[in-house]
Amino acid sequence: MNIARMTLTGFADEISSDLEEQLDVLESESIRYLELRGVLGKNVLDLTDEEAERVKKRLQQRRFGVSSIGSPLGKIGIGEAFEPHVQRARRAVELARFFEAPFVRIFSFYIPKGEHEQHREEALRRMKRLAELAESAGVVMVHENESHIYGDTAERCLELLESAASDRLRAAFDPANFVQCGVRPMDDAYPLLSGYIAYVHVKDAVMGSGQVTPVGEGDGQWSELLAHLRGQGYAGFLSLEPHLPARGEWEGKSGAERFVIASRALKKELEAHGIDWS
Image 1 (cartoon, rainbow, N blue to C red):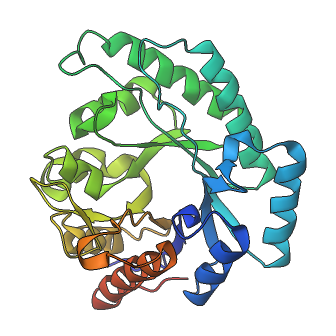
Image 2: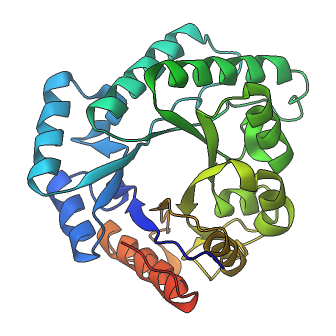
């Protein structure tokens, strides 16, 4: 059996909007990477060149790396103009190169309920265009499965990836998002997508209600996923995206506290599977 060392990262803007607090909490959890999405009170794609330089300098001073640009690319309606979005995509890959991030997270456009087939060709065309942009820039775009977009089910995710036919378009496998779409991650999605998985988002969810939980407390089949990743020698990123609600069991806890809860739940599962991490 292959055994690989996986690398932890996370959406640090769930901790705080303040960069220093983000880094303090990551450091306290021995996590040396972050998925750059929200910083200085704005989305990463909206950073000016000066702001990006300031953020990069601070990351270097504190010895943090960027695993991915957590962009909102593809989070527009399929009927909205695409060309202005391509300009945003160019900014995303520019920032990926600037921050030396190997990945850019993307989505596959919001589709009106029940109209996936009607918008199929346009969704495929747009994703292929983004893949071509990634190829020219030398970065990898990873498609996150999410509800209400074209690539919400495993079958449609596979269709997007096969149609683009590019090693610069891969899958960001998100078990919780699949659960929220009524898809069993390991029974239904992993068998179809395993050959395309280049990145993994870390959160869990309960089938039916869709409530997000720490890893191992929902129906995301995390134990099976980690066993398969370990067996395949996966040596990529596991990106914490807690999304724990500030109510119920976690009522009154800060974003930092909820992030730590999610981090330690993941580490517990990794330890149970004998998986090393850094």
